[in-house]
Length: 262
Length: 282
Image (cartoon, rainbow over all chains, first blue to last red; front, side, top):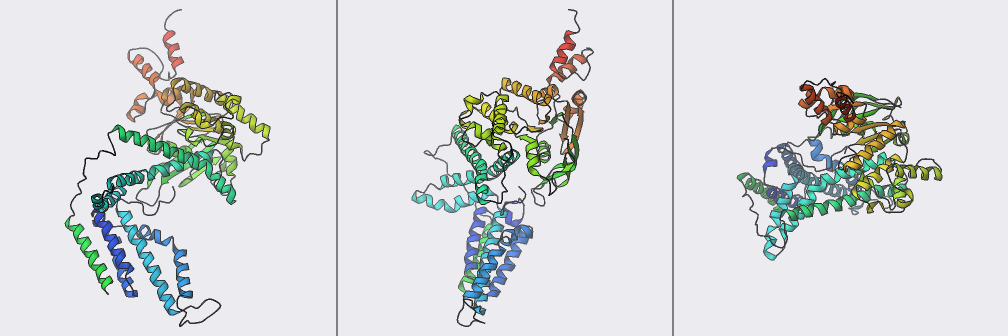
């Protein structure tokens, strides 16, 4: 793997890293609600400043923090252009064929881009500062009220956490098989589309077989250690929120509420 | 056609918190017709080394030459590299994917401009080398074989292109003793037929038996490189670094400590038997 995947957890010990996973996830939802309700350019300025503070607090290198959003630069460009050209046909600067660029369009475009950009960067901060297992724990915790109406949230969480745990293994395995087939003379870089599609087969078949085999082995191992889905007696105890968690939630809520009310 | 690594370094995931330097300025030349054994503890960079030599990874620094040509140059013909250098990975059985044994074994031949008969002859020969009856297995699914058989099928797929240079990453791990023996004998035969072999193994006895030269890596650097007898005679030095010189060498050492005059370079089973038996009159 030459380039690390976007949003890969980067271990650290910053304040943000140490927050409880579910508190962070809640904060993210609250912040996103706030961002979506923002309707002025200075508002986005405040959000940007807040986001930069978060990134500094979490000690995330700027390249990592903005990387995911930066990869979408063409998408942003197109969105901006389309809004600029098609949004406000009332008072356009000029009319030409189907295009009618206007000031309103430009502003609208900037709003949309700013929103999506902030959504991406904020979720990226969460992903990068939270270990995958802490993340699945957080989801389980947030979903746990559903247990009252009979939804097996612990099963869902188990499935999720197993899936997350095996992502690196899966990547590694794919990489190994790709190398083995390359060494045998497979070509994955043919310019012809049909050739390219056919070249995937030597990769796909072994990857799937290996995944099924692994799933089979894992389920056996879990059963051997007494895991059963029909008799679940344990109830997970979640650690209580610390002062920092409450503080973070309060701060985010206040910020978002301010934007929603205004 | 020698493979030469010149001051090669490799770092995984550079520029991230996960960065790990696997190799540090390694220089190594593998000449025609050599049988080189590579040893080292887990994580010492053995697998990275062979992947660099096979052109499957691009070095972070340094160069890799095949026949004096830099394989990472833009103009280098990669397909020639693929045909000349065969790689048997750890657990090669995972690379099987075709519907029949014949098709799977012939996969590597697809892009070669050989005639149909020549390709089929190559497939037949490779399967027969690995101990299969070509006519009996050619139309069977490769997934209907046992684990050990699948591994032999996968190796046949690598040998079908007749590589001049064969790289193996622990090919005998998990094989039963008889298959292991048979496989090593086949390697010896291929080697005697002119193939250059580069094999990673933890099995010092097998390497002592078959490899002429031993390369040991430690923490991404060359730790030992020389003729097998010479490298294994320093049993103490290897042991301190967590590497076994093999049971035969261990026996030699015990006997020497008891006052037997057996040379340190006695590393093969046959040699040792000869040394012991030679002490008594017929």
